[in-house]
Image (cartoon, rainbow, N blue to C red; front, side, top):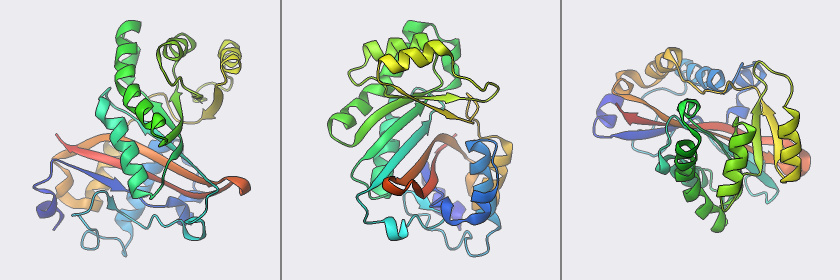
Length: 261
């Protein structure tokens, strides 16, 4: 039973597997990543061929479905993006997520890693914010130096703070993931700064704060049973793997790390 198998663990990670293989999930228009992840948990909770008895609760991560890339698995022409949704400025979370993604997806490197910082950043003064961000950023710079990450990026920080990070970091961000939630244009000053500093601006539909609410936990409990009750989500990483030359998405999925409350 899941409750028995997770009872001695203080943390565990769930991998959704390759969601692009599940047509019903890919055809549905999801408002944002949290709604897509909730829908994936709901789908697997209802799926008769994926149930509590078939999941390997001794593995890390615990896979809900196959992550096989099929015909693309041996291709050297793939480009992988990992976006990390961080609820706290915990230095170990980001590096752990990257290492887990590399190992579990059997990749030698990631093309880009994009960080969405916690909502608490809005309440921080600039020096406190920069110190917190660098605490997360610097372990990833070591992975850049080691050839495990090609580019680092950020999500939804304003121009002043983007400039601060660029000036302080050894490996400045090369991607700004900008939310179009409630706005359809990128500020012109940000566009000009990005152009001058070789930063690519990519838009996305996610809200500026990533939250997994009661509905997600309810679907998680349907999937994992009462074993989930002592745990809460600590971080989420969305991976997307593209066949670069053909602009074909080979895989898309989520890693969700839970820790005991």
